[in-house]
Amino acid sequence: MFKYLFKKDTIFATLSVFLVMGLLSFIPLNTHVLDPLKLALQDFDYNDMAYSRLGKNNDIPIDTSIVVVNIEDADRLAIANMIKKVSACSPKVIGVDVLFNEKKDSVADSMLRTAFAADPKIVMAYNLQEVDHHLSHDGYFFEQAKNKGFVNFVGEEGGVNRSVQSVLQDHDNKYLPFAATIVKIVDTARFQQFINRNKELETINYSRNADKYIVIDGHSLFTNKVDTSVLLNKIVLLGYVSKSDQDVQDKHFTPLNTRFIGKSIPDLNGVFIHANIINMLQEGSYIKQSPKWLNWVIALVLCWLHMAFFIKYFLDKHIWFHLAAKVAQLLSAIFFVYLGLRLFYGSNMQINMTITLTAIVVAVDVLYLYEALCKWLYKKYRYESLFSLTSHH
Image 1 (cartoon, helix red, strand yellow):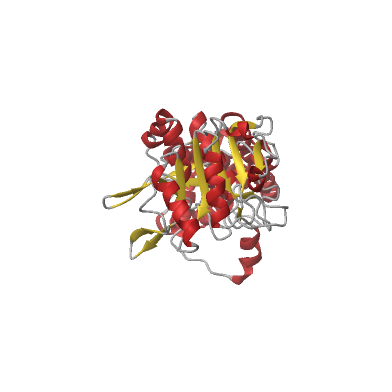
Image 2: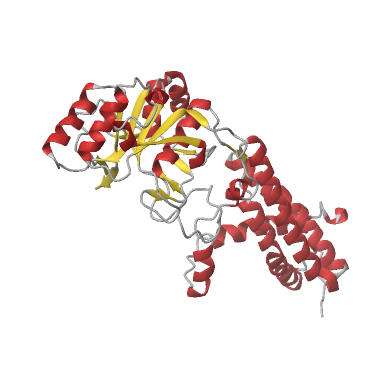
């Protein structure tokens, strides 16, 4: 292997791999043959296995700074009364993860409008829409609310919610995500840290599942069945909490899903996704990601090493070439995925190994193309290479 490492053909063949990958990226592939595989791997990211298989963050204790109030099937009047009841318990902030998109009951609407307008510690949720390349908002109380945040998730319509959008700007209008608006009220320094990162998308560090948060029944607030002192100086989130695993109302796919391929049932309510984002911002526990240039350098170096190994067997032990190549590809895929998972598990660092794995897989086929090219060049121009006179039977 090492005797071929610095041969010009090893270097040229390695570069050819990336040339072919670049050309393939411009070719639209649309084949029904791949539909079942595409469906099974839809929105798949091997880093999800750090949560579902390695148990990333499983040892993190229950969060005591956030209390979730389950609104269940409450109507607007009941929600307005819940907000009033919670507000009387002196929480740090109240995040209302409920969408009010249109006018309904006049009494309830009046109570909600007053609450959102009068109390800066209450954060209203709304959705953003893109209309004619401009952002517009849903939200009946948008103009009156002193504090509000958008609750759109990155990965809607069946996708996995791995990221949160940062500040969105449309002309002079700035829109903050719901969780960031809450953190802005309780911890301005941590909020500013989030803003200073200046990232379009922030990968969510899912530190806790639903059972790692304190949840109380919103209706029990009116019957004195709950010790309301639990709300004192807490971040309180009002939202819907599913009654069972099969209840998918306001439920979304996340990396915490135990079924990471071919996901069928969403696993986490939106209110808990917001809670995880709040935790990440408050703790400063952001996911670190390797820069793109480093991903390409790693891919180039590892592809070069594999190419030297492939050429050795291709020329010296061709009878074993295919077996050696497939074994090397399989072991490399397992090793690099596992290495990436352990790095993510232990240090919140994500390295994108997709380019590397693709290059290693493509390398064998490219080597055959490179051999054919070298033989043609030798026949046409007497170009000398390692493959000029090779023949395989």
